[in-house]
Picture 1 (cartoon, helix red, strand yellow):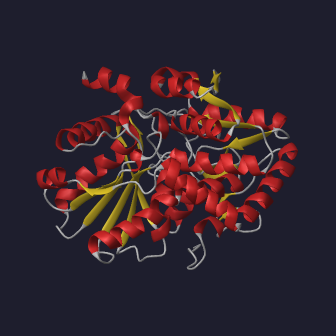
Picture 2: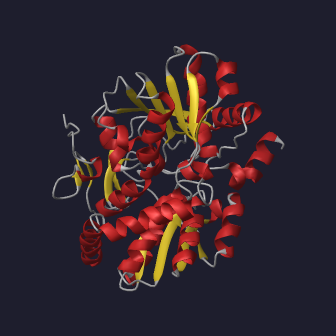
Length: 408
């Protein structure tokens, strides 16, 4: 079995063909090989460039708002009993979600590459919103591809994108959700890569896009490592880091700094979208044993039918409504470094209600899936166990869905 190597960043533990074990790679058309190679060379240069690192850190601190808070949910802990529940409130970052880290880095890379245009995909609207913000900040013209279904259910973020001057390109093909938006964005880039930089919104796609996004969101766990040591004086003996998993960018960023710790000390729990109760559709390829397939340029576990065609997914959460998952998470599952489970739409809604009832916190439907798992397991655990949930987005974008489902 493939093992995780100590002392080497996980994003670099791939072979010469871009595979982490059986996952990843570069399944791309011939026309994209040169642009991808150029981007790979540029990124490897920039990630070692002191000036580029200084610029990244400057904007993370002074524009993104790093570090985001790390707090104990006293009331929820008291109500549930058992383990202590803490949260990293990444939704306090500029724009309301973790996507701002990746958008900032991609915009800085676009400027270094001399590109005037930047394009991206989005499901929940956060990747699109953040990219539109970063494009405006750094003087780039921005185009966002988004499924028509998601445009309708994530109106607040669409309004923000347009306000920032971005063009939203509606995608009418397939399920009209994130998977189709990513496909259309990649098709556009094939024809416009000379003048345009592409920002893939999560740790998915050809190898280099997985690496750039993972490198960017790792800021979350860098901050958390410092905050845990400051809060507890040392690393506690029992920690469970729970994160929702769609494409997998927030969860990888949340776990990265701790991957080389013993899993008996740091357990990683990824929570996928189980979809509506009693429905056969879901967005949980890791949980429900999906087979390996090729999606958006990479080998991964992906929902597919008996003929190998990509199946449509269903989830109340647009940000998790994706049939595949990051090659990094597939690798973490196969090496048994992380375990994965799923929460249904109804469980996520109940978790949202409970968290907002007891705490001054307003998590979006994506992290509500993670809170659902925390709420489920906390009462069964000892009081010296520390559960940390990544509250990676705020519920402002979900206000219409919440009003329809919960009546408020």
